[in-house]
Image (cartoon, rainbow, N blue to C red; front, side, top):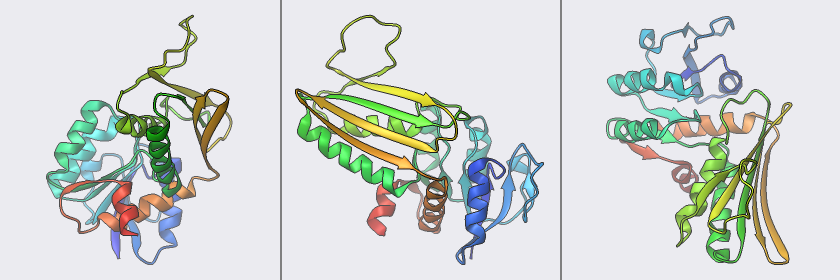
Length: 252
């Protein structure tokens, strides 16, 4: 049985993963960490992760970038594998994540859905074939409680597209402040926030007289929780290094 520390256990995703892990024969959440300790769980919850004295095998993090430094300090000092699913990380955070992966195994993905990672593969293929003839726009929609915009997944898609292009494109966020024609050397990224939208992402390739659109809709948060638990099982006992959803998919 893999013993899991759930960082951000009382957030929406933390509670989803707590429920899903309770149905698993392979993993068990034995401790949690959250600044909100009002929710009662079947495991001890610590406000400060450094106070956690429970023996754990893997950490799953669905928290907030503000908790990043303490999390990395805790994981590296105790040599505990980490599944990093928090979005909105800065470039400094990501660099520190890469540095920490030399000490511990870290699974890092801006989106834990297997489906969205298939979409990443599809948009890379499309971008490579259509380069030079199609404008690219990304639209992401999320619930009205989401803090970061654009979403980590929108940036994941944009970065994936750019990685295969010979001529790298710049990212343009909204256009209300500029009154000019669209630049051909850009990827437009747009955010919608409202209601209880779990997550929708559309990549639009707009050419002359034809449009290609690749979409993904998340109908519940369970798909992200299932992916995070798969990642925890995958990274358990792995050697230090930075692992992604590509590694998991190839191992399936």
